[in-house]
Length: 238
Image 1: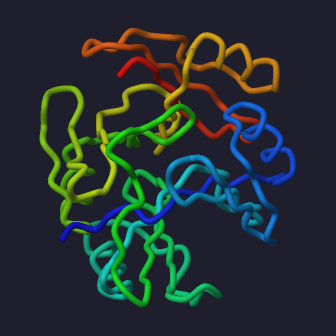
Image 2: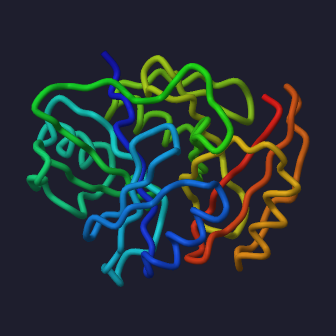
Image 3: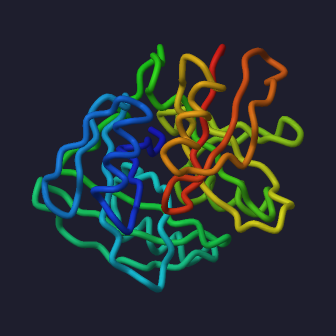
């Protein structure tokens, strides 16, 4: 069994500002339950995290189901990653940890009382997460890292490597990032109208970094920065 995505987290400096931004943009319902704000309507268990750590930037992260966190973190270090949050218990049961991959991208590991499958669905409706993307400095290095740590099958299809949804629980892409901006992990949300969504992003104070662009297989996509500088993708027509 592959190690599937349990949830995603958007780390932000101001939880209430992020709450308003994402509720207004995607019609998600965000409930404040303490340090973690629960997102409903994204199609996958998700949270906004009030991020207090000044030595690590705000970010978008995914948490992966693993059988054994200690073994996972040992593999992370063996493959060149760095543990930034050792295993800790969570009130709802199980435990979590965080590490950075060789590009500095923050990833979470989750170990529950039982191994659960991803909550992703075969049909992605509007305003739900459709896929994730990892932009890496060295695609081949990241391919080896994620294959080794999570046993994901990653297929090199050219400029974009495909991460098996059967293994990860959600379609994923990995590619070489050649721009000056730092490598990143982001999520793509399906929207009804990319252009209208980008107008809303600008109205709410976000910044468009990739304008609406055609996808060879059909549809369009775009990327923007939220109020904390987190890169988020949107797409339609697929």
